[in-house]
Image (cartoon, rainbow, N blue to C red; front, side, top):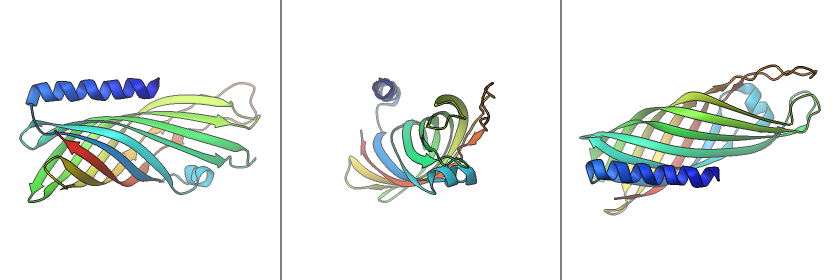
Length: 196
């Protein structure tokens, strides 16, 4: 249901941007290595995982482009201390601007945006809530290199830095209290896309 709504949101944005500009719309599927910077997160869920998503980029004016994206990360781990199984699911929705610098066979770009982030945890420990969901608003900084494979297909090699923090409230009656989750991470990945 959530994925279906996100896909509808991306399609509607594609149509809106296309009606405003009429050309240079980029739609891509992306995958990246998710490299967290927070030591607690790395100790629970390991140093690396995979993140997957889709992104829609459209020209607004000259070399300025707008983007909207959604990404999904999921990883199993073990809690600190009690070593009980835990799972984290992270959904991001990005919205921002990119500046394109064209060259002969593609484009280099830089971008900044806001990143509403949903953290959903599932824990087996009796000392914390079994299921907990928290929304927060972070940001994203982007750099990438788009290489044109043809007039309509391209590869996007990208490096993103994401910063977000989920603040949890204390829950009465539990021996162990939840802490804020720092979700800062680097994403190093590739996308394949279609240019309209």
